[in-house]
Image 1: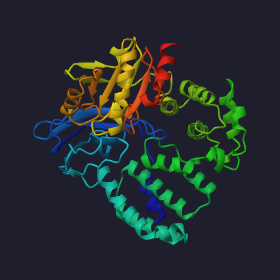
Image 2: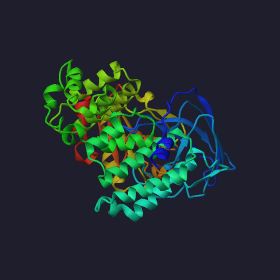
Image 3: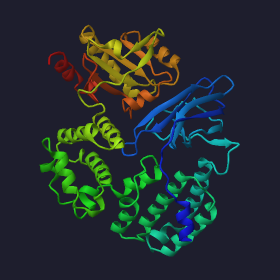
Image 4: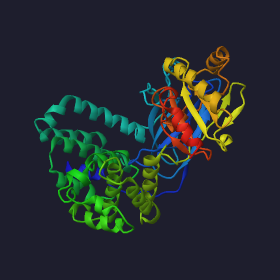
Length: 463
């Protein structure tokens, strides 16, 4: 059985030339909407990058094309409804997305779980990666449903051996390398649950010896589980290191890497640096660490690391940690005003900007905008006032402001740019943001107009 499992998990390098991938499909009920294709830039920050989008035509059909050089974990989305899929170089995919109500009046919020898209892959090859993963995940889910307590509470390791045999028998002829690694690290998580190996042996077996599979979702998921709080709590060799005294000055990178070498699991430079990046991301939010020092060290890795993947990850960590911080550029937008004219963030530069995200069904929004009216009368000549309506329908916004004749500042509609709510991390309404004349964040989230916003406006006007 062991030989069969090893043969299933043969590791081959992820090197290839970009090949076209085409996705075609139908999405009944989503006519006129956009379908977006995102990939995760890295699995430490989970930041996403849009690689393709297309308008769904009047008959519900869409088509996307993108060049792919290696297997990628992707998300296909319509509004905030998503489905995960894998893209393999040179493959074509035919999708049938089940009909659903895309125009529900339920609050539009990307941070409230939206119903997932239900997708059938048409004419799929049973050896195609999406089919393999789906088949394996059904077996895995059923096994956990029946035996989680047996593993977690009773440490019944024999059940793991039985499940391994079932997996080998089900996929013995499979040659897909990505899938082999996917299985290996999904099984590693079960071994961790059952404590079938002590943590040091587990880490050596799955991290010290094998290469790092940056693009494999299950490898990185297990990496993130295993190394969570590793530097500050889990590792016996590292948890007593005086990190605040190391994380300062231009030599902090060399000093930290040398200190971490005391952990025998991290002797390999590439793994040690990746664990360091994850640890720095966690330390940023702890009160005993200087955030500027952490950002400075991340810049060192982003500029000087020998590993291209780590330069990208460091840049993404910096971006995720400093997003919407004072002094960082405000996310761009191009939205329609009440007269259907396009207003961009860039066009507002030269004066400070107060942005309010709101909806017509938010009672608190109306109350705060009544107070905002007083601020506009006082500061309207010195700065821009912008209210961005997140209702699904443009006409709802128009009907509202037609009733409120004294709301004379700029009103914009979110339209189909729902990702803007993620860009500004809009988790509830209303949300106020103050932006300086250069287009950089001044205060996020800003106080409500009825609770001290004018004080911040005065400081912004008179720095």
